Image 1 (tube, helix red, strand yellow):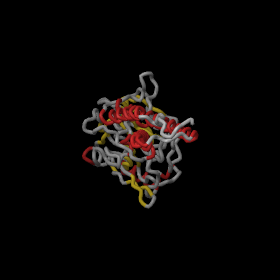
Image 2 (cartoon, one colour; image 1 turned 135 degrees about the vertical axis):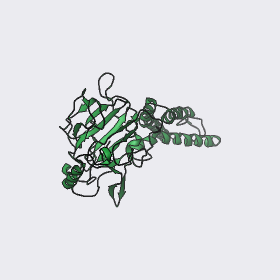
Image 3 (cartoon, helix red, strand yellow; image 1 turned 90 degrees about the vertical axis):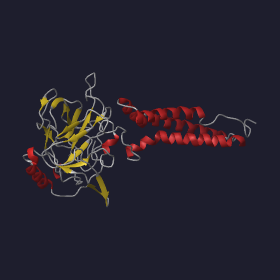
Image 4 (cartoon, helix red, strand yellow; image 1 turned 120 degrees about the vertical axis):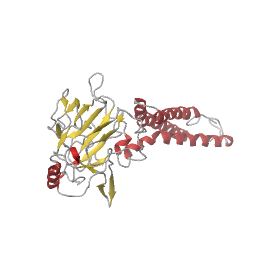
Length: 359
């Protein structure tokens, strides 16, 4: 007889394999929560790519071995080893599920805030709003419920700002209040990146543009440290050049819908690393440390909260509305006129587009 009932055979997934995967997971999660700087960023990337890949590969190997055994109709384990076998299988399945869990983040399931405390992160910057028009904070703040960017390392304290009407669900750019509104420099500094030429996407749905995520954008190196991004500008509107110095309030471009976006808005975030690599190329998105970004000279909180709620199947913006103000608390020149013009151009349709908005 080729195989006898109770004959010993190697397990589908041994303790050493479980231990190796478990050790890798412990290292990844440990650095993610307890590390600092780019170590955390690399751990975040590994948890969503390398470790799930290894777990899926191990699952495929175990599955193929199980099918091969069934095809050969090999005997079952002896009774005295059944308990240990099921214990090992239980631990293996739990380890495997923990390894693939970060894959659910891309679906919005079980998303974690990137674990960097606001109070302990420096440098930080306080800047003016990027337009003179009243702006709705679509996403912003320190918590995930009001800022979906908070799960990404480089955009930990990013903002998506728009002008009413927002979330109208229209495929016409002119129906959105932010479309073509002048965007100004939130702070003075040196322009280290000024990119134009990306097309404005059809609004009302996520563009899914992962080739040029930021679209047309400007990045400014601030004197106090950090690089400030102003993104999703209108094609052909970028008004500054790399290497130039801009004053606060100087025209950068116009609000557009380029890049990975679902409607016209202004994306802003502050990061520690330059967008240029040491060899002069572009630093990949999500491969930098985010820095705290707040606003001054406006009529709201320093770090205004955003948020989008869905009621009756329709999304509704619930974030703060803020506007730039001048000396003495009066509205900045042109703010009222810009707000009126934006409202007249797009009407007062309530919000209605995917909560993804942009990155």
